[in-house]
Length: 411
Image 1 (tube, rainbow, N blue to C red):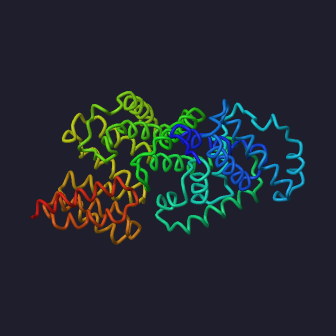
Image 2 (image 1 turned 120 degrees about the vertical axis):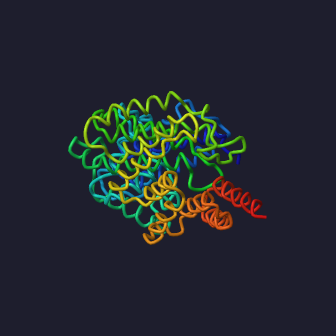
Image 3 (image 1 turned 135 degrees about the vertical axis):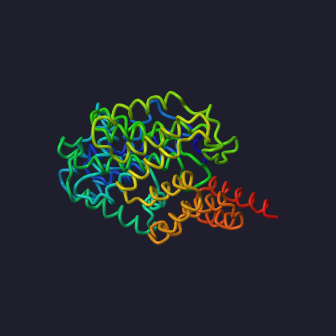
């Protein structure tokens, strides 16, 4: 079988949540629709290399998925008679149904329904909208893959049992789901910006889709400061994308990046969004993270970075959030201001916390701070431990290179 080219593979990833949204809109059955869309994507992967990409690829996928749904319904997979009737009445031409609404945005809010716990809603949405694998989602939540698989399965069952209508929620419903929606978009962006598994450091299509959807949410809620803060954070972070990897895909750390490659237009847009929201009142976690990103982006050289300001922002963020990754980044900022021994002291508290136990970033940060403290032997050992724990090949290669460099210095 001829494999899909990169452009077609990217197109399928982009269209998958749109097609799922359209099929759910028609058939009102989340779990079965997901199966039908997966079959349609497999059919595309098989047929498009031989027959070419159709003129309306979205319509083609919706039509194939809808036919699969009709087959399921005829064979008795769907249990409600009205769905069977709807399938029988589905004209072939209408399978490519178009909508003025953004089905992906609707699907995003639908998955974050009140019938689900926040963690289940976020996991389900990452799967349906973000296209993340169960392993990638488990990594984001710091839980075993089997635990996450059960959580996603239960979430699908709850969505089906709830009978939630497919459409944008009311203003009141939207307010109740917004926090989960923003967290989903944040996690999708993070996985796109630094892929947790595989040979690629970045998954540009995920990061771009997260930005697109966040723009859509911002258009719905232009006065919401945290929506604007999240969009600013994404833009300010994504602006560095071109400088984060070398010609062979190797990881380039922030301090070594060619800042001339940073996207100044994105930086300006992110700073403008942040400047417009900060004076409006209470400051949220996304705005604080965006402010930290802005301090990094506005430094002409790594040595010009205002670490004192970054530490102050992390102090505020740490009080607001119990996220261990925030605490880890706070330790780095503290080390840059007060010296590596202070950062290492703060890492001891994270060891006692336990939530990052076995996570490669804890060992990577410890290695970096030990190197700054001059303990190259211990630093090299922790770089190797971190390399053994990451599932990202570019990160592993970078960490092993750091370990080897320090070993050479010792010898």
